[in-house]
Amino acid sequence: MPRTSSFLTIVVLGISLALAACREEGDIKIASLKFDGVKSVDTALLANALQTRRGSRLPWGRKRFFDRRAFEADLKRIQAFYRDRGFPDARVASFDVKLNDKQDQVDITVRIVEGEPERVAAIDIEGVDVLPERERKRLQDTLPLQPDQPLDRQQALAVRERVVNMLRDRGYAYAEVQLHEEPAGPKRTRLRLVAMPGPLAYFGPIAIAGNKSVGEQIVERQLTYKPGDLFRRREMRESQRKLYRMELFEFANIETAEDRNQKPLEIPTRVTVAEAKHQRVTYGIGYGTEEQARTRIRWDHLNFLGGARHAGAEAKWSSLDRGVRLDFQQPYFLGPHFSIGFRGEAWQAREPVYSANRLGGRVILTHQANSANKWSLSLIDEFQRSSITAAGLADLTIRDSLISLGLDPRDGQQEGTLSAIAFDISRTTANNILDARRGYVLSAHVEQAGSWLWGDFNYWQFQGEARHYLSVARRLVLANRVSAGTIAARGDLDLNVPFYKRYFLGGASSIRGWGRFEVSPLSGFGLPIGGHTSLDGSSEVRMPVRGKLGAVAFLDYGNVWMNKWDFNLGDLRYAVGPGLRYLTPIGPVRIDLGWQLTPIDNLKVNGDPERRHWRLHFSIGQAF
Image 1 (tube, rainbow, N blue to C red):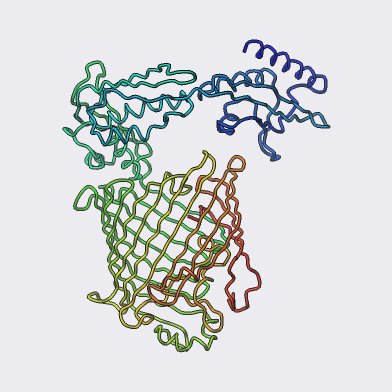
Image 2: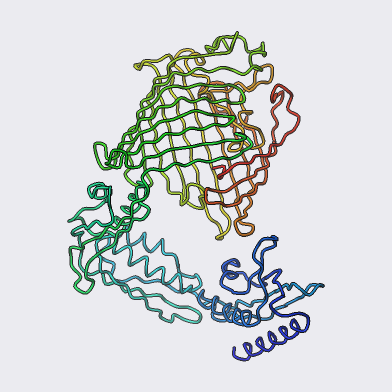
């Protein structure tokens, strides 16, 4: 190994002298840095561990220049990087440093021989008999390092931390774990973890500091533990998350305040907060292919009349929807996990097929036990007026249908009072709501209008959605979504369902080969008129390209059918296409190009026959 290192040093010196003969070393830009022979580690992680890096190709991006000393140190870093990941024999076999014709940029290729890895023969965990057998088995099965894998030292330390955290999350606050490596044959090492759980500990007194206008009782009721409870660090983490979710604090921290040398069995905790501004005004201006220009302004008071009550007002305008909303939320209603909210709105939706005006409000009782699980029960009371577009009125083939829908065939209007009870439930484990890379989201919605309630409409609505996100090889994300819903009216299917409740698909977030609301049953004239059963889904492969720029490839599918519970999997519409993503603080800016695989015969868009079978969508946020 020393001979190889000396040889590489001489070669680097020779290359540097050659570069210096052409230009000053600091003037040579790094155009590319490539690795040959890398099979067992993430190339991106390897590149990020080095000082020698490729510069940006954008005119305003950061440029990187070749430095001999940094490159020589990087050659040693490559070997250390591999050694830490279980490849003790890995070495840099050779490298090429090539100047371009102008002699102002250099392309670097490093060839690596990984060698045989040192593998984990077994992982033995001792001293965890205080845990139930089921938890011991789950711990063993979910360790970040498993037998027969290369002995990654970072992962080995993560194994130790996993055992420590499991013990400390089950009351053993002073648990310690020692990690031993024992030879187990050629290129084989046994990991032995010896745990010393110590005695069970409990939460002791709670001290709160940093609050000013927010009372201590408001902070205390967000805590998921109380003095005398079994000590669990995960309860401290969940309490801290709950404090942040209130949005009253810009900083919240929960830590133990015991003397570690004395190791008391009743552990005091200290809650430190820093209050945020409780009144705020937010506004935004944007553009999307569907909404066109849009603007929004919102006022929030996060501690309205004290007690962490939340009051807000919002106004929005776009080509698709506009109006004003007022809302109020009372936390800690009936119990620590309940809240009750009131919302009133005057809102207008202007869709490609119809327009709808709503005036009314709803009362919402919400239960949220933790950050993953939530359910709510809503009482809705709204006056609504719907009207079909001029193209729909001109379509004589749907005159009878307009009458059955409750729409006046002369002006295409429908109005009435919607009174309904709705139940929503969801579970979310996705790591990021704006740009998830792992986890899943499950949600369901049931709504019943009329019957024993007042109002002019009478129906049941059922809807469910599932999303799943999976990271692959640390770079790719496989994202999948499927959603289905139906509306079952009592009596006349059309007359008892508001027109704006009908299902339509197509647009930036569903079946992207079509425009918004273009996928649905058609009238004889070719106008989408919506239906009462819907199924749609998407599959995406998301991958990074460079920096904050990413790309996707997607397949969308689905359709809308006229009757309730009328799912027909043999009659689906499909669209495929590529997309680009650019990460911003408010979510990814995205551009998607969708191509129809199964065009809709006789479809008319804006009154004219559809002539192109693709759509370009521009928006903010992932499609799902």
